[in-house]
Image (tube, rainbow, N blue to C red; front, side):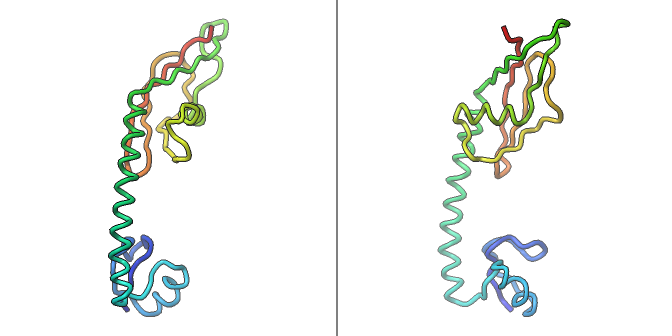
Amino acid sequence: MKIILLEDVKNVGKKFEIKEVKDGYARNFLFPNKLAELATSTAIKKLEIQKMEYEKNELEIQKHLQSIASEIEKLTLIFPLKADKSGSAFGSVNKETISKALRERQIITKERLEIDLDRPIKEFGEYTVQIELKKGITAKLKILVSKEE
């Protein structure tokens, strides 16, 4: 049976591809889960229009994410932490702290991002953190952890 994939399906194909699958698989799994539809001539024409709109939308999202990444690259976040008697940092800077700071500066809103930070930063100094936005776009963020005065 010839089908049009409406979503990416593991071991079958990507969204908008036309594939040949077994009838039972299409009727019992793909169609009920709205992962595919029957590839009729009308559906194929509709698919081409949807695909063009989807690609245009993806391009706009890509441009938006690139602009966010360039803003992040220009930015240096400063986190003042209290120091204990020995002079070491009291507290830490973690993924949530960084994410919150970016939201407060309205650089990101709801975009989910992956901050590459193995463990919280607990020492004063300058750090560079890799931030991965969606679609494989990354940016390097400078972080300065300073003593609170």
